[in-house]
Length: 155
Image (cartoon, rainbow, N blue to C red; front, side):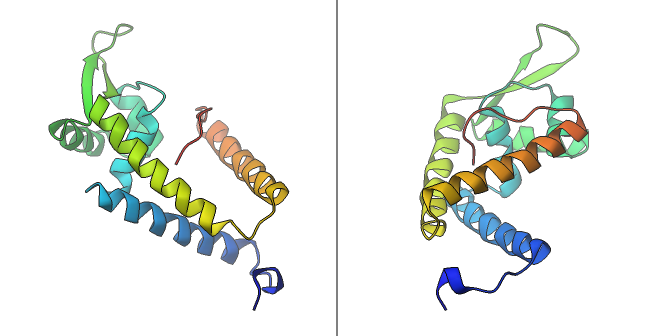
């Protein structure tokens, strides 16, 4: 059956199956860099900001001890570094290293190719609509949780 003739799966099933497709693709690219999905999310968050450990815990929806372990492992690999906060001397900020930036970019580039392949049956207008709708859902969810979304293209 041609993609245009496929029966509508309904919102819940379509989003669930799309999520599986996206997560599977992203997992493959993360694994190629010997990273997990959560480590990849860490790199994505750090691409355009230098949050405190507490902010990272909120953005990743993890407890602070889990974030500490996550950052410890990334720091040992040379992907991130901790720096003292200039705003609050008790707080520590986390930022990408050059290696972390290159690793994140490699994942993003491979993922971008796969997304292009997965959406090649859509017209340019449909791709724009999908992007706009997904952005609205993500922005609304972020606003509910009290943080802003990235303005950069992301993976």
